[in-house]
Amino acid sequence: MTTTPHPLTLHDDRLFAADPVQRAIAQRLYSHTRHLPIISPHGHTDPSWFAGNEAFANATELLLLPDHYVFRMLYSQGVPLDALGIPRADGTRADVDPREAWRVFASRFHLFRGTPSSMWLNHVFHDVFGLRVRLDATTSDHYFDHINEALQTPAFRPRALFERFNIELIATTESPLDPLDHHAAIRSSGWKGRVITAYRPDAVVDPEHEQFPHALRAFGEITGEDVYTWEGYLRAHRQRRDYFARMGATSTDHGHPTAATADLSRIDAQRLFEKVVRGGASAADAELFRAQVLTEMAAMSLDDGLVMQIHPGCFRNHNRALFERFGRDKGADIPLRTEYVHALKPLLDRFGNEPNFQLLLFTLDESTYSRELAPLAGHYPALFLGPAWWFHDAPEGMWRFREQTLSSGGFYNTVGFNDDTRAFLSIPARHDVARRVDCAFLAKLVSEHRMDEDEAMEVAMDLAYRLPKKAYKL
Image (tube, rainbow, N blue to C red; front, side, top):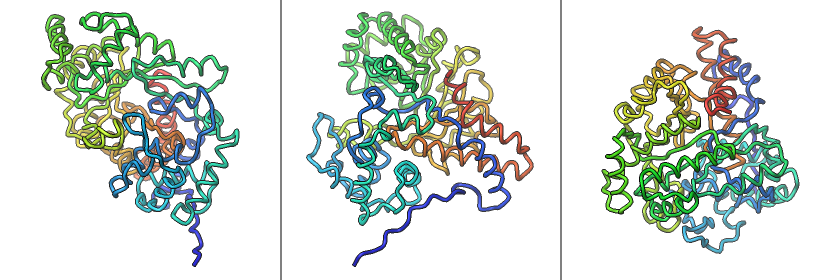
């Protein structure tokens, strides 16, 4: 028996309050922000897409394989990553027909009901590809064929989509070992789209990183510095930061397990470094080294002007077996309890009052928003709060972020929204969700007479566009 597919619709008032007064205010606010250009100052899209501007291969390669939000849910429900064709750590992958992988996904799309992933994906299906029936097992092939046909047209090349999405700027994230050839190709191509890089030195900063010995050696080779001496190591960072800045970077990013910072003397830092490079560092030594390097990075930011981001409090690659087989970033990052007040004090003692230094903080520990982060950002001129991140990059998480940071941090000690995604086509959807949530939150304040509507209008536009540009020096 043939079943009629369910229609796919996106309600114009999604994420707005059911209360008609608040909903009407939110509608008016949103009308002024929905078409603003997208500033995407922190993310993980592949710069080769924009350098080569080649057609995306198929729906699976574009929408399923890069998105760990999607395949972590499928894995949690018993779907092996090999069944989806996810690349393994050794560069191989299971011989899976992309259509069959898409069918696995489609037949389980109900698992995403109510999640932000369903909102983002349905936005992509409806607004980007013009699909009007829901994805499920019965419509899987229709989706796959429709999307693949679209991807072969010029309108769905990466640069055309970049322009269609009204992206003013997008930042990717690269290791200091990356030659940035794709960024060079973009700059020399004559294309007007602005794609910049960001400096992410974790592999040469974290002694517990599985690539650290190899990465440190390559760090020396690419810079020509003796990175096995403390001063040579620091010079290598300065050199690569300078190159990244010349290639458009305005920020650095640091994904450490904790927010610990340290301010050791030169002699003590040198002794610690020698212990680290000999390979005999304890876990405590590794933590102290990461902490010291964060402070060194802050000092360099004061010199070169790069905005500093810290993404702490995440137990990365928690699933050891999955990590060993498939490598990093496969959806097994788990939030950790994180302390900031004492952890950041050494760094803030040196740089927290510097007018030319900007530190953007993120967290996966929501309990710190009102207790630690907002009071810190509400005091130190150098400190700003990044938006709700990873598991909290959802309507409920965004709302909690605003509720818990407003009273002591305000709106203007936050940096607007960034999407932090590898899934290119989800970018307009994610920004749309953030803008809707902020407009709904502001509408509540207006309806309670805590803010006039003209003030809320200005805040909404600042959060969507002006604050990220200012925070990332764009």
